[in-house]
Image (tube, rainbow, N blue to C red; front, top):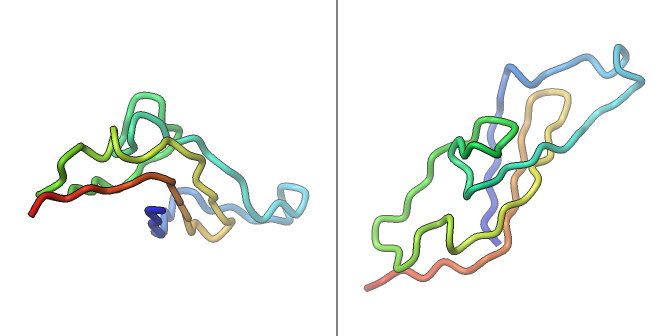
Length: 83
């Protein structure tokens, strides 16, 4: 699993204004890093000595966003670096 956590201030809301909703999910596709099918911004991550790119190594997945802007993104897959 490859997991990232970051804070996106533009994704904050007041739960009491949205039926006490405290979290939601957004699709992140095409390997992340702003892929055309992604619904939110994702950080660009690159492993320099990776045999296969992140896009081919990790599956697309939903990211969980909390009302305070915390984004938690966990993706299954295997990273295979070269030595």
